[in-house]
Image (cartoon, rainbow, N blue to C red; front, top):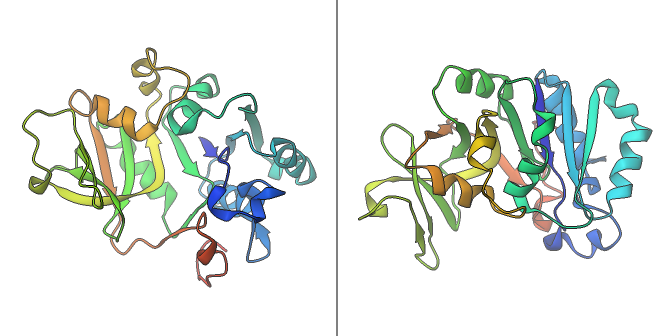
Length: 242
């Protein structure tokens, strides 16, 4: 099974730590974030991984050399010339996903107790183009879903800004769930990305096609998610993934 780890971010929230290293290599519980994510993905059966890089890219490349690629296939998607955001990063790596099978997308700064194999299996049994891991937790941004767990829109709770491809859209009619930065995608998704520019947000992309394709929310009850992109979370003690 194949996966992409999104590790090209600048890590601005973690400054000054990220003034000398990429966010992916920031240590958590004695190991770089990237090592935690690769280990979790590998344990779930994913044995071919591509990692996008930008900020201090050579450090990540050297890290994988030192670890002998964790004894699996690991490729690098080089974004050193231009940071492509989440959607652009996935699109640039399209050639890697040449087996016609769904693939995992995982943010490098997300630690969770998610059962990735169960998530993958659930996606395979659905008709969704993309399955997004979501949960009921406090956030400033929420994705909005109908009763069939189909994506319908997005809302920022602070500004009350709303995005949706549907006309006469009322966000109060839908369930608000927070996105966890982990998704399973069908490779057919690249057909819909053809006309998109190099650099774009994957959430904006999902919202643009939500009225034409099934973009599904996968809500794991009692999901534990920690955003390690926040400095206050780096020293949290957890009993999962570490």
